Image 1 (cartoon, rainbow, N blue to C red):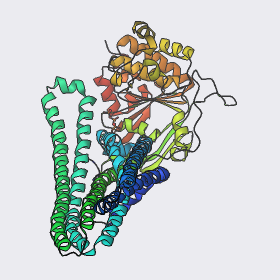
Image 2 (tube, rainbow, N blue to C red):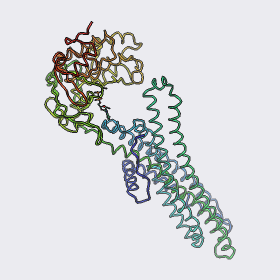
Image 3 (spheres, rainbow, N blue to C red):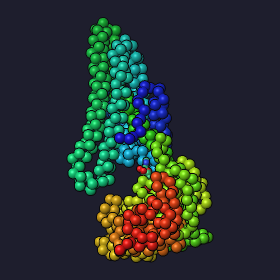
Image 4 (spheres, helix red, strand yellow):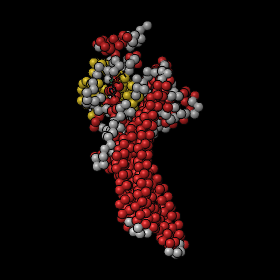
Length: 606
Ligand SMILES: Nc1ncnc2c1ncn2[C@@H]1O[C@H](COP(=O)(O)OP(=O)(O)OP(=O)(O)O)[C@@H](O)[C@H]1O
């Protein structure tokens, strides 16, 4: 599969770590006050916990000396209540902030994905891109808040606990630190492995989404080909890979967890042995040993926190890297000025002249999809004046649809110039360029939603009258009558509840509602029956009287009336002329015409 691969996780201080920390800071920065509040609450909770052993020591000392313990007991209870309340409140603040971080990351990703250049979408897998929005962002939840706070509170309480332990007994502290150092070494060794497993697991989740997207994109074909089991196995294989790496990560995390547990247990035994003999020899009182042992168990908490923060960081770093890859993909330039929403039915905006047909010119245009790939266009040169109908014909793969893709600036020409209204398309503000064009792509896509949403998709200002008119013109009025909820009927995923011909007519109606100055129709009538095709051809012919219409057609019968026909072959323009001229002058066109049983008048032979 073709996903950009993330750089491998490396040690602390590496460029990757610096980049991750910088990105992490970018996510946390807008919420620094909330994270600060969460941190304060966590510290308050930790401080409460830190004081408990000291209060216990006082309690034991008082009991040993026969003093009263009522006040100390009350203080201890208050301490417990305050610290748990502070912790609970802090935890809520952090969870809420974490959700906000995820939302911000998702919003920025979604905004970016829809502005990606087509070439990038061709290169990536949509399913994998989707999983970065849905799955990777959730990993930011823990790393951006909980891990930051855990690391900070863990470090602070660790230092505080060690300081108090040093105050209690330096020898016992030496024994403790010697054993606890083992955890540090184990953590340093295991951490990168958790990061690696998390990265692979997320990549596998991306592959799973890609597999599902592939299946739902061609659901009927999958079923008709009897490929359900094979495709299921494919998606399952990715799910299993995600499971395997998840388990691997869990294994390392468990190992890490038991290592720090073991370290504290061993430290406990060592302190008990050394401390016991120090109590026996009278070097320290028994209350000091008890307090020290309590602190030893108290040490577990900050150590856990630090380990937890480190493993969340590893998982988060993998997600941050995958999200950052999307930031690295090329996007289309964003215009500062939004073009006006075109009213339907050709009404000019106040102060705007009536839309006039746009001209198109290809000047020695060359194009390829990437360096090292074959030329799709080689010095393509033709001119289409404003108004009328121009057809582009030629064998499959000649580069006809690519003409439209270059006019819409889905791709940039690699040589020469594409001009609309005499102006290089690269000089047009992109949204303005597209606002003057109506485009029906080859597969006449219909989006999930209602019929109405589909029709007004390119002309949100269209009124009900505009809709009625266009429905009548494109022969869709009867369909709307039949539908249970009329225009508000759901058309299903990719318009699956409509017939192929209906989808084409919806796509044409959508493009016409935009009242474009240039109408690009790519094989727009291929699925229509004879009656509807005639009707739609009449609509297109009518449109050609007030706008410029460019059609790509395989069936010459649909374009013999065109004002001019551009014949393309293997990425070049062979000839331009009317049907009659081309039948007489161009060998390829004459052959195509002959194959399709046409005479030079364009009428089918009897
Ligand atoms: N994203 C892409 N990456 C690489 N090559 C591509 C891409 N899209 C199209 N091509 C290639 O570009 C060539 C021209 O494609 P284009 O769609 O313009 O042809 P066409 O004349 O419209 O063909 P048809 O009549 O079959 O629709 C084809 O050989 C195709 O394989």
